[in-house]
Length: 97
Image (cartoon, rainbow, N blue to C red; front, side, top):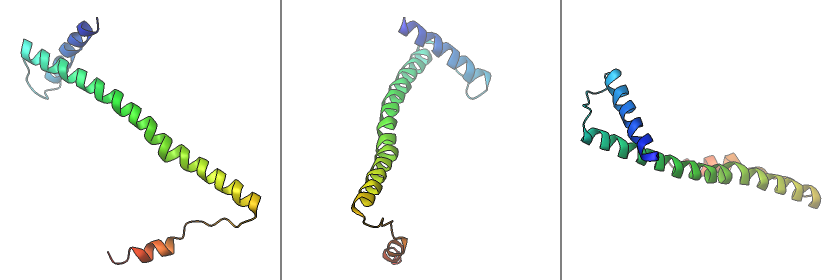
């Protein structure tokens, strides 16, 4: 059933490419097969990148926020002052560029 759906979608993709004058494609076995394979590859890439983006968002957004919350709670409990990132030392280190 999925293969029939992909082949039907290939016809619609070829029709859309012809309708918007992107390219002139014929309805033959070769173009339909190439379009079907490209649809399958795009679906696989989408699933891989969707899973990768979930991991990326977890690592880049969630973990730093949890780390900052733990750091603020630790600083509050121990009485140590909160030390933020010093941009002056960062700019000094990059002036040789």
